[in-house]
Image (cartoon, rainbow over all chains, first blue to last red; front, side, top):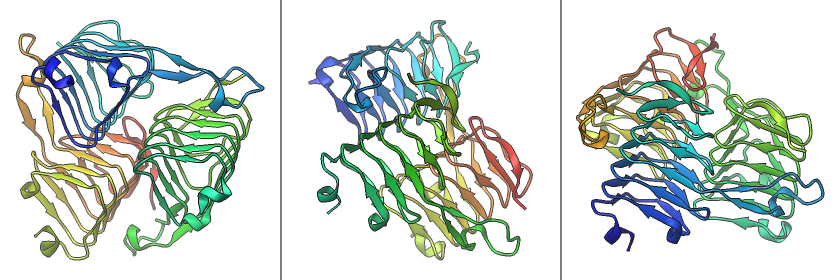
Length: 136
Length: 136
Length: 136
């Protein structure tokens, strides 16, 4: 069903998608092996987006500020993730809940993106991901 | 068998546990997809511990100081790992041999924990994992 | 066929090798679970090399400098990777296209190797991987 709405979608093996009803995909999206799209909080992906292998996109977070309840039983926050268009996400990247990624971004392999990438056409990388250089 | 000793244990698919006889689990532990628990050196996990997907816990290390033997044939050191209670380990975390993690810790996604976390209720992250802030 | 040319090769489960005709392996190589060897650009691995689980070696790169073509349809560059001998690559390491790794290197868990390691017998780690100390 996702495929019908998303022309030229390529999804490789061992991809884990949860709550796929909360996933919106543009056209020309490729999702490589071993990727996790955890869509409980909402995930929107634009057009011409390549997601390399073993990437994780996470859209929820545990609360943890109550000292009297174990962290794992504290409420879950839903924080949507929005991936723009013409984006290349490298291998083994983790994108955390609430992040927005601007059009034209390259996210270097192994990065953890903890904050939104606001400026278009940049290359970001590292843990946490920071601006490396302009793409163009 | 592990399940009988560990009430409210949740283990997702594609979890790799080696030398499980050296694994001790408390109650209310969840172990998500793609996690590796390599228990040759001994692994102790407390109560209320959430381990997110694609996390690795390693309990042995190669020696490498002999110049005349290939590293891969030098002796293995067994260094137990001890994970306390009420701990949230994020996605794609690697915990190295010999590490102890104090109660109440949150380990941010993508971290590599190379040294023990001694202080309770902190949030740590990065490669190597460093103190980010207090949890409470 | 790879096994016949590479004595004492050990390959664990869930290893993904693409374009294996471009892969050259020495003897006494071990490749652990969940590793990706993407060999389109050429991958040469020497003798006595241990690759721990969930490691990725990448030998191609997207071009991205044309503002008028989506990144995912810009040309692919082939950049061979050369791994020397007596090397230990830790868990969850990513080695990017064009990198050469000198004999005797240890690459710490979770590293992303973006540039060649030229000096023999060093320990490197982090994102991007940097010199930590001499191995001997």
